Length: 132
Image 1: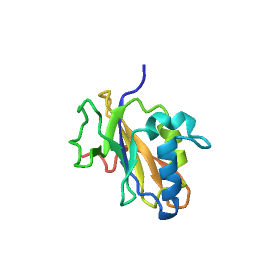
Image 2: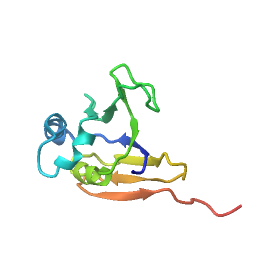
Image 3: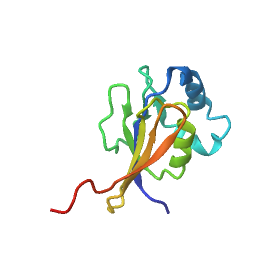
Image 4: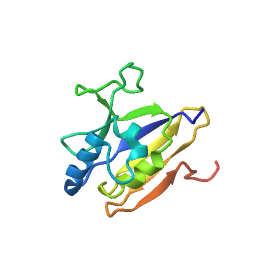
């Protein structure tokens, strides 16, 4: 069992963190990374320092893969998404976001935004205007 959702990555890595992030993605070893292995093995760091996902081998992704075989989002059971965000906050540039959208039909959306200074805040879908 688990909650099916689509995880979108809108995160650019700080130049100073590129080496550490590359190493984490390649080895999946380091403090706090053991439980993130299933996420780290499908994430790719592009030359422009943005994170994306490797396209699924089954071809059932919500997005058509780019020429390099990557997609901006993947569906799955992202049990450790918040832990991934907590690790990523130290490496993300200001304005980066991880957004999750429910695949369960309940319309839920949530995520995290990074301030570029090692902090993050939770995001959630909410009303933005009065009833009409």
